[in-house]
Image 1 (cartoon, rainbow, N blue to C red):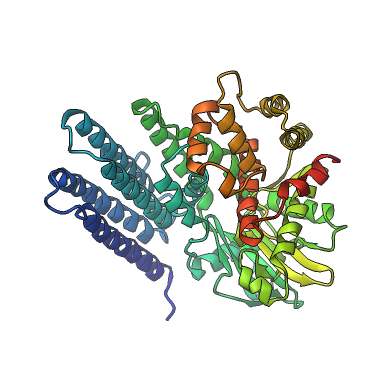
Image 2: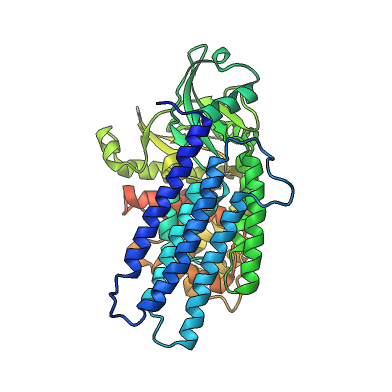
Length: 497
């Protein structure tokens, strides 16, 4: 059955409420797990009652926002907060009151707050953030993805729960996507495409991708930005910045502003498809000497700031080890090829695909071994030669065990290291980011991250982006070949850029 935009929006609103009902039931069961004999139960039930009120208030606001998406933009009078802003404000109030109540009760009513209550609050807050991000999408998805990679900012329950946002994004209704494509092309779909799949092959936080065939038979991927998403991103950023500023004044130890700063820097890059098309073309040209890399070509004359048409390229998802083996490819060879390609791009050419999560990396069988397919270049960028040189010096210092040289290189990248820096923690985190450690030889990542936050504060944005990219590569590598010496591969290029 096919639904129009209003029907699909109504279904989306209904799903928000169904998710809230499941969350409500799960939280109630969890709050009662300790049994009625526990003296903290009456207080726990009071916390649950307050949290449930916020849950349903936020869910109804989110459902209203989903149901109103087909409406024309600018429908609210000036000065009236949008449902999205109200959802964020409700979420912030919920989290703040939940933690404040626990802290105050622990101070005045001894024995009524235990370690399990804090864990319960963390899991409840993480679930609320996940639900809000999945309901609102856009900026909230990006914020959740970033937060999931920053264990120094949030408790482990948050980073674990929010990590699922990497691959769980609901697509937009086809009717809205078709209208957006027609507006960007300035002509009917049938004049451009011989065939166009209604179901997307991928859906992300700000755009989705459909497979199509041009009139000349060329298979293409059409990446179309969600209607109105640029305006929503700006409104969301302003709301998040205001909320984070209030939280910072009330709780100086909570450093959430770096999330908004990161999004303020990266989202404009991802929203500009003309910039992405240029980055793809540049990377394709840069790596053209390699037969083991595929970067899709851009279809000239059809891409705009909000629409990107490129070659459709197929392959096996890089994290699907069984599918790689079934296709005759050795996972260990794939892991080596992955790190070799990224090391060459970074250290020899100063270019980085900064969002290498498994959904953006495919693998094809080739005559000379596996071929790596690089998709989604919204965060592919050139890096300053000085940053690349400092990263190369870091690699050399790590291999030689030269602590002084490593500290100096870190300082030159903009990391505020000094005599008070917790060197052991810093070395551990740098080892994780640059592929110099493995799970069995390093402390728990959350502990390392929180130590980093306390020791050096916020990371410079570009270093953070590089670190996040290398962290994603490290995770894929450990899945494919946990014994691979990544540092040795990287050093080939870092030692001789």
